Every structure is written in structure tokens, then in C-alpha cells.
Figure: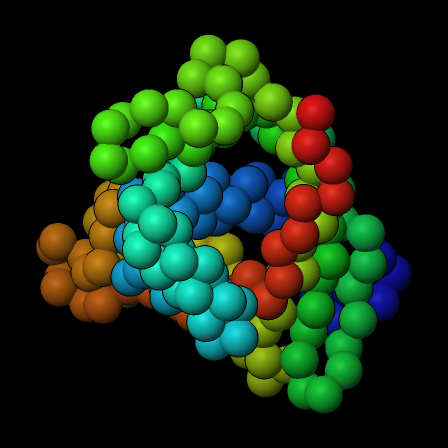
Amino acid sequence: MEDLKQISPHFDEKTFCKWAYDILVCVEKAWSLKDFNVLRRYETNELYQIHEHQLNNMKERQIQNIMSQFELLDSQIISYIREDNMDKIEMNVQLSLIDYFISLKDSRKILGSQSQSRVVKYQIVFVKEERIPFQQLIYSDLKECPYCGAPIDIYNYDYCEYCKQELKAEDTGFLIDKIEIMSLI
């Protein structure tokens, strides 16, 4: 963390962790809805291609993974490194959530519980290009347009309804490069 503070003395870990949680929930909701546009907005090309393949596979098999009722239990930055002109922040995020699979053929539950929460610990790596200053990384907890300040909904936007400017996660500089489930209870 000292390396991160040297590069950006105003970096706030608590704010970043809150932002990371919001993005993780947005991505998990998009996964449940098979919303490729939202995934594309928040993931690197490599991760997006993996998720696109997995979702298309589930679509062919007529299976849907439903996740809801997200609650943040813990989040912390594990490491920061700068390599290959990229800033990388690795973190652990622990959530409580409802997570189950259904058959789209007959709406029958295949796996998981529709009523009992599970605890999931994720390891996530966020990356951004080194040239993008850290000061641009979070704008008003992603609740305001970075161009005009109008309120936005991070779970449901492509552009600012007021100024019509296109909005995407790249505006913060960071994208998810890796997301891995470390434990599932």
C-alpha cells in the first residue's frame, strides 16, 4: 500500500473498496441477466471473452445463474503493483448473497438455494493504464455523471440522460482483469 500512497497520496482505500463492491454487484447482476453490454463495460477484453463463452454455453444448455440480495461482509486491498505500463490492484471481497441455478426449460431449480444466503470470497484484480491518473478513478461513487454532474444509476446506464455523453467503466480507469472465487460457503 505504501507504493500506492507514493503514486497517489490522496488514494482512499475505503472509497476504492466501496467502488469495487458496487462494480462487483453490477457485474454479478449482469451475469444473472446475461447482459453482455454491462460485462463489456467493466471487464478487460480477456475476461469478457471468457465470460461471454461461459454465458453462451449456459444459454445453449438453457440454464440461468441467478444471484441477488448482495451484502458486503469484508473487502480489503491485498496488493498494488505497477508493471507493463499497468496499475494493478488485487483485493479480496467477501459477500453474502443468494446464488442458484435454474432450468429455463421448466423453471426448476437445479443447484443452490433461493432462500438461504451463501458467503462467497472473491479475489479480484483491477487494472488501469499507468497514464491515467488515480484522481480520475472514482467519480462521486459513480452516482453522478463525470461530465455534467447529473445523477446516474450505475446498474442501468449507457449514457447520461442529461448531457447524452456515453458512460463506461473506463471513465474511472479501472477494469476487472481477474475475478476468482476463493471460497464458497
